[in-house]
Amino acid sequence: MVLAQLGGSISRALQQMSNATIIDEKVLNNCLNEITRALLQSDVRFELVRDMQTNIKRLVNLDDLAAGHNKRKIIQEAVLKELCKILDPGKPSFTPKKGKTSVVMFVGLQGSGKTTTCTKYAYYHQRNGWKPALVCADTFRAGAFDQLKQNATKAKIPFYGSYTESDPVKIAVEGVERFKKENCDLIIVDTSGRHKQEASLFEEMRQVSEATKPDLVIFVMDSSIGQAAFGQAQAFKQSVAVGAVIITKMDGHAKGGGALSAVAATKSPVIFIGTGEHMDEFEVFDVQPFVSRLLGMGDLSGFVDKIQKAVPMDQQPELLQKLSEGHFTLRIMYEQFQNIMKMGPIGQVLSMLPGFSQELMPKGREKESQAKVKRFMTMMDSMTNEELDSTNPKIMTESRIMRIARGSGRMPHEVLEMMEEYKRLAKIWSKMKGLKIPKKGDMSALSRNMNAQHLSKVLPPEMMNQIGGMGGLQNLMKQMGSAKDMMGGMFGGK
Image (cartoon, rainbow, N blue to C red; front, side, top):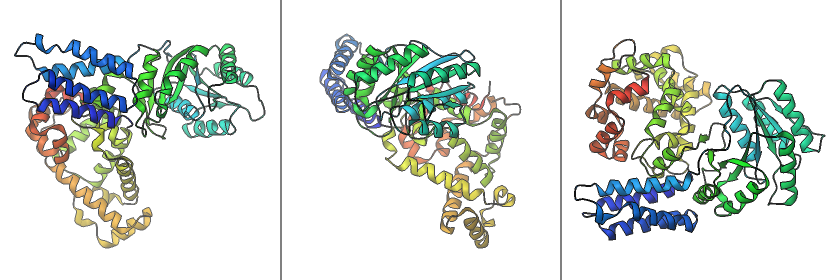
């Protein structure tokens, strides 16, 4: 993610402070100077950084702290609090409600990813039980309707637009009226953008807004524009009643901090961030978990939530039973790959674990890992039931490997690579053998068996290092309340 570098720099500053024998004024100043440098390099406005440094010094008064206080933790909490304050201007002016028709108008400069973001926003709500629809009122950019039509068709979302009508106001009104009659509860209007702020752009936006009377106007901003975002957001807000912001292209530019801080300074809350090109690379922006992940402190509730969404409730007891028996087949590996794909980009998921910095996932490696999983699944689609359900790797003879390679359009050495991955995972899985899983989802017996010692044998060495070894793992389990809470929350136990 774009802010991984910033998060890594701040985490290192806090870590260097933790390595100091005594936390005094000099150590605190060095830490704050490193954090200030990181924020300024990420294009966060100087005034915000200056105020943040002053507030942290006020919160962390070393002279007033008694000898027994954990000064490192107090400083870390103060940094977290102040970063959250920078990014949290409050709630959006309007929040759509499921089942009640709402009109949402999208505005922004051309090239900010507005049309794609409209579809992502619609797709997100569709997956959560809404009935969205898209209206293309962008008659300025050639191909705008074609793009929206293609995106909407792919996501199976109804859309409206015109190749012949040049009046964006007329198209917007007709589209909104049509979808209101069809009882859509989220009507999204995509408006024209320009290469720069122009009077004609703002006048057109104002006319579309007056005609459609949107409940919410969302300003779409490209994260790469840095401090220029401040003036942009203000100009748009003066022309139409911007109630919320979505920041795009958060996956590939070092200046994202500027966009976040500038938008926060205009008091327009960020509600979503776009983290990639694909439809599901779109995250709800929640300040505390976001900053927590940025600092390498994780987002445990988000991690558990992703697992619960990925593994259907009716499969959870069965999954645990297989885990306790130690039987690991290619079919189980396939099912777990499916669950991983549902959880979203690997780097984003791992960043929810305390101690994992997104800097540790080298650029390009995440997409490479995702592609490898898809490749393995394609090869397993060419396997027989006998091959998928066997626990004996020796079943994969040379003739079978050649058949699977031909059937999946891959090379034999790629099938062998997949089998090596299967053996590695089977070895990890076998260490879970012996856990007693009670019937009907009662997790208490599992909780008694699942301790830090057991988990340390299961987790890969590199993840143990990222967490901070056995001590870090024990702290992680404490943060989650207890092993019972952790496993109960992850797998639906009471």
